[in-house]
Image 1 (cartoon, rainbow, N blue to C red):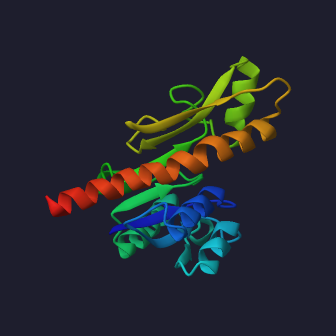
Image 2 (cartoon, rainbow, N blue to C red):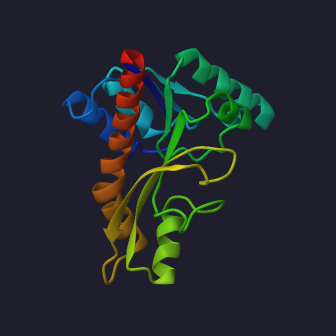
Image 3 (cartoon, rainbow, N blue to C red):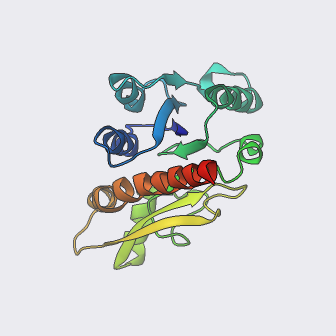
Amino acid sequence: MLRVAVLVSGGGTNLQSIIDHVEDGRLTGVELAAVISNNAGAFALERARKHGIPALCVSPKQFATRDEFNDALLAAVDGIHPDLIVLAGFLVVIPPKMVEKYPNRIINIHPSLIPSFCGTGYYGLKVHEAALARGVKVSGATVHFVDAGTDTGPILLQKAVEVKEGDTPEVLQRRIMEQAEWVILPQAIQMLADRKNREEQG
């Protein structure tokens, strides 16, 4: 069983997709161990509680320094004993100590086809604004492992989505969520759960 901790900052639509896939049996061998948010008002925490998943908030506002927050976040994650950490719209830079402690065990979903429109400053609607400003005909989403850089880790899965005439950033964001993000994030988790299962049986 792959113990998964999901880190999320906002509404948690990707979290909901993972929950739905687990509950209806499309995602197997996975235990959603906890949801952590840096935002006490994140609707994602409500989604977690509604489905009986432990929900924690670790906010930078609770601490005097970023180092203290980083230590508290790492302690919260360590307390869950996750096999996999999923960043599902987590808008906080992951502490380097966490990346070092969980190599190839942290994955992120990014709303573009990396290496396009990624890296520092590219998050949320900003990604889709940049894609439309550039005039691309195809965008999409990427699931990748998290390393010391920003959006630079090895790519696990990508899915392309058509950009349509007249798209606004909001319309494109929604299409990429529905056609790519909500599809490939559960798929990536399944791949890693299957890998763990094989290793345990091997």
